[in-house]
Image (cartoon, rainbow, N blue to C red):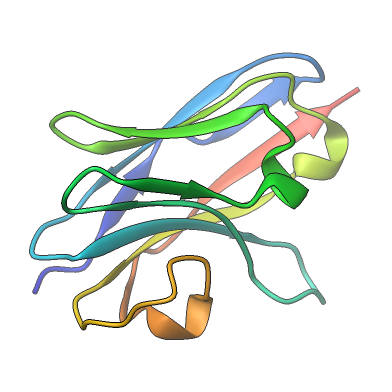
Length: 118
């Protein structure tokens, strides 16, 4: 198992878009999460090895989508300052994974910072 590697973070004006990428292998589920200082890590979306996706609409609110090509992508539209966070991708290899549960993921990337300014 190789540690996932995220890329694509940066600074963007409110209302703008960013696409994050994650390169990983050997997973059953790959999830996107984010965290701000002093808060717990929260799930955004996940994709299974079979291509099924699940989205935490409390966070995404119709703005974020997850997809896969050569990497797994998190497309984020209509970004808001409250989306500012460190974004992580993580992989889970065991069965019975709860796709939006951070504790069910074993391998974590180093994170990529997203800053949304008004």
